[in-house]
Length: 262
Image (cartoon, rainbow, N blue to C red; front, side, top):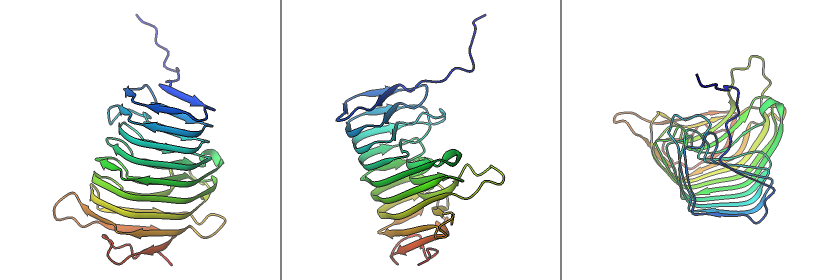
């Protein structure tokens, strides 16, 4: 009988650490044991024309994980995985993602941030001209309870949702099954959604669950304009939910996001 070590750590298929002026292009990744590509502590990174694939039910098979890096650009890439298509993690800044087709997967995420009470920051992120096809989430920001830091200056623009779950979501109680956990003290501010359209697989198409934390402000400076997300199922109406979320929404947005506080 073959011996198996069930405690072994699944490897990342391709990992770059402290690689400045990195260029990565024209690669095909299939069925990584864990996340497909990791970028860490690197600056001025250019990623383009990748094809990344794993089954939708394969755990933790993120497409591209970025952490501690700045001036990262991702272009013209197709990603279908069992987790985030792209995850922008702690201490990242100036990340620009465009023309990415995501699905299956968990969408394109800022975070998760603040696990085990960590201090983490993310700033100056742009996600544009991307398609989300039957993903678990779409444009997502997620933070753990108990963490601290900030997320600021994030723009999601010209995104197309096709039967996506949670097309627009900020979730500050990510994995909230820890009894007695303190609220998230990661301050989220200046997040813009401009030109997000398509269909949602769930009625709650827009969900902002923000924690007041020590600042008492929740999420500030949320802006929604030119948003139109209908239900994928006939006869169902989409709606928005806001908790401790502050910002503005143009009257033409659908569904209405009147729950945003000034």
